[in-house]
Length: 56
Image 1: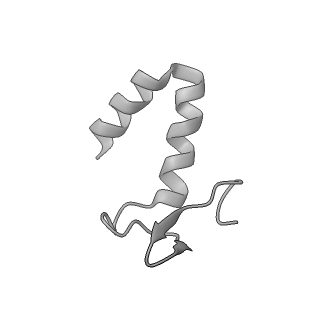
Image 2: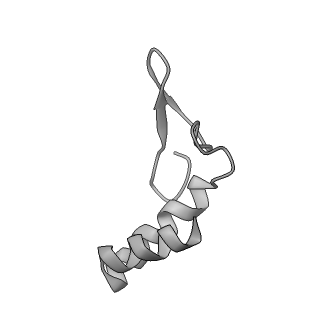
């Protein structure tokens, strides 16, 4: 398990657990994605997506 009960995978002949996005290597998915999931539970999905897009 990589972070807070969340596991992140990419497909390379089989699924492999990862700490880093293969497409966006500078995006700290282990830190950022749980933060925006928590934010979406409090503020709603649209607000969290809007904040994520502004951050990216």
